[in-house]
Length: 136
Image 1 (cartoon, one colour):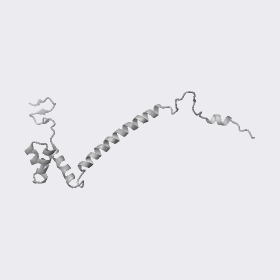
Image 2: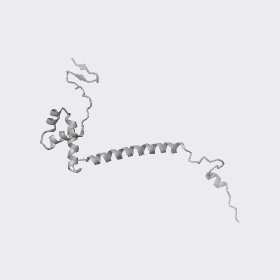
Image 3: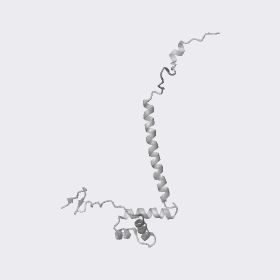
Image 4: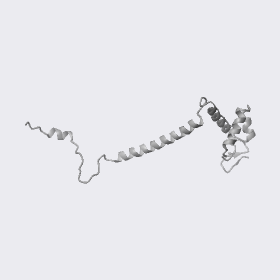
C-alpha cells in the first residue's frame, strides 16, 4: 500500500519518488565534480552516483564548465551568463517603469495645472466656419 509523504509525494508503489531537500554546494566541490567528468573521463551518471548528486545538476555544471573552457563556443560563459542576468533584470525594471508612465499618462488630461492660466483653447471646426475674415 502506498503512503503519502509530508511533501505530497507517494512512495512504495513507485508512482512518485520522494523529493530530497534542496542542497547547495561550494564552487570548489562543483569544480572537483566537473574535473572528474572532463579530465578523468568518468560519465556524468557515474560521478553523480558516487557523489550523491542528481545527474541533471552535474550535467549543468559540466555544460557551464565546457562553455567557460571554450570561451563561449559551446554555450554562454560565466561572464556572459552574469551579463545576461543583469540585462534581463534591467529590461524587467524598464518595462515596469514604462508601464507606470503609461498608466500615469492615461490618467492625465495633458494640461498643466497652473493658477490663473486657462491653457490653450482648442478651436473646433464649427468655430472656424463662423469666423469671417475682414478685408483691410
